Image (cartoon, rainbow over all chains, first blue to last red; front, side, top):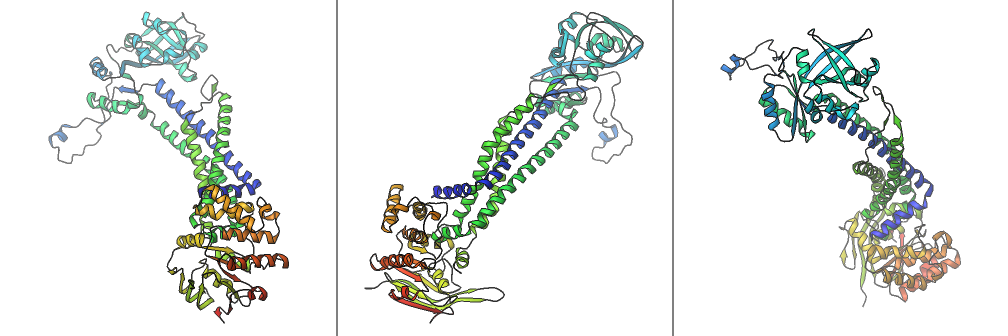
Length: 416
Length: 224
């Protein structure tokens, strides 16, 4: 019996080839662009998060506290309402206390690689130019485990940094501005008035101009000496085997050590919100495209229903149920949806391939990048599902109208 | 011994609205199995409305109707559709064939919908029906490729597809020329006389009505 209904649906569409093709092309284009835009947006989001996870610590333990310590009066009267003004979180001006002990605790957590860092400011002068620098004092042997800077080295290696206590890694922009080359020396002044001369053992290029100009990487002990903070670190940076466990790990460390521990998700909360908002906008736009296409289907099936009143009447008088009639017109929507998917998804894949071939130079970067495209099956499934829902949804109203046709109303009109 | 196939008791149909219209009222009648009945009357008298009520295409607003001894007034639309599919056949003034389907496919539609015969048996049944109505050569033609008389014969074949107890024909010769009309009249008459079908025909044609076993004349929605 279903074959009969499908056959009637098929012939209705074939009998109106031009209108069917127009509405089909709408759903094909809608599906194609839905897929391409969705894959492009998701690809760029995934690429962004990937870079975020790769290039920044998964958890950073900072030398500050999130909340003020509980005051003695509040501890003495836990049930009382205690209101105190101007209580501020304590800041460790000299860095994390006993950071080595803290590191020992953190390193006991499975799947963790942690390293102390001392951050500070410095200045380099050359040919009358002063360049402000962010000093990253790290344990050279740990750098590879907790940082991706090694993968951006265009000259030299991390081993050179580990092998030379006075070694320094500088960015390509800084090297360009100051005409520096590997093997040359630069003298860095700290805010404490201390100066030290370092030998350039490597040059990195991340593609982010500001980073490549301002960041330098040195041995922790040298930075401690420059900043006059012996045996101090003001951050512990952590890389996790599972980056998505960062929030739980951060909460655990903060609960134990008391120091503010920031996961990469928390550090990028504003960016993640922006990405979520971007997704909402993107899906709204592409859904609107499909909705317009769905109106085309609605239009065609409505017209068929109007034109086929006599056929509906005869089918019902012959003994077809109202449900059968509804199935016929829903099947027409399903046909258009399936065909739309069948042609629209390859079209979308073609657009995705084309976009993937284009090179873009994004603001703030110094190199050309390929457009990141998400080729995951989920993108195809979402686009296909939206197209089918739009097509069948568009057929729903006319199909209900068709099912409600009373054959006797049509027969009376025809017989008059 | 005669068997009452269809019985109506005070059957009525009123259209509600700002100005209610009574299409049919207080019809009492009995139709025996194998009878050939003609329903006549002036235009707008309610002949077709009565046919639609008897054929379960419309539901009465008053009275009761029995088909083969079963009271049908309380049946829902699906149950009525099932009865129409299995027990009743319809031929209308306009042939009402599906234009995208060939003669063969139009006749096979009710058989396929009922699903009682397998595909080969259904095809055989369709071929037999078309052959018996002189349509063997037209089997693969679409409705627009056939004459009005041929289309009406395809409609009769479709009405007979599930071997119904009753054939309802609403002005079946109204759109046909004299020759085609005579052919259709003969077919319907033979269905009753030779094949034992009950045939109920609405017609304006007195000569056609004169060939029936019984004529029911309707005036202003009631039996005159």
